[in-house]
Image (cartoon, rainbow, N blue to C red; front, side, top):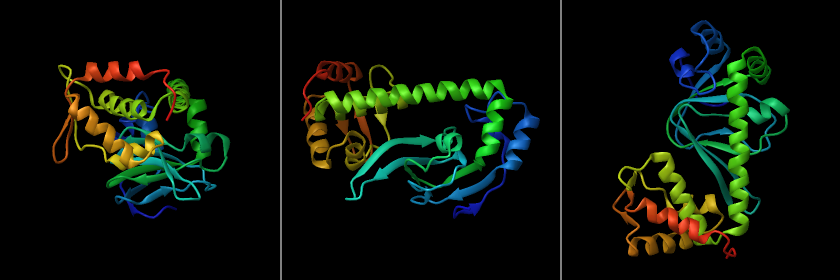
Length: 240
């Protein structure tokens, strides 16, 4: 059992999951009763890398970071997940040790389901199986793109590409995008395998070029189309 305060089951919370949204209310009620519901404070560790436990977690509220630390203390951040996302499905399927740490970014409510119940859910409901297959295909494509980017792109390109990813998550309006709160330079660095100082230099360069602007807590992409052209123009350059 993971540390954290107990939370009340929520059928509405499960319905917000892309994996479960097509299921009828009676089925969601059964799943809600099978789950363990917990609240985690910001900074709490939910899953530990190499742990041999295989539950699946649905994020009902809040957000988490999927990350890992090397023996020397270097951090690699894979992705941030938010309400409606889930994690732990790989371990639930293959019963191998966890491949990453998962940390709560803010106060979060999660529902966890035992691996055998999760697998039964996939086999029993075609919409869940279809959604799971699409989810896994998307993850493979995303990881393929990341490996290609890390292997072929320069550090500035990787930083620009990460900002562009955030723009696509938040959404742009009339060629502009407000990212609030602005990502910390150290967080960007752990996502693109560089250091905070290089991120600071690249963002300053983009500000001077008029692509970005910043205030106390917001990063504003002033020209999304130009950022896209910069990323496209960097493709094929030799990594730093």
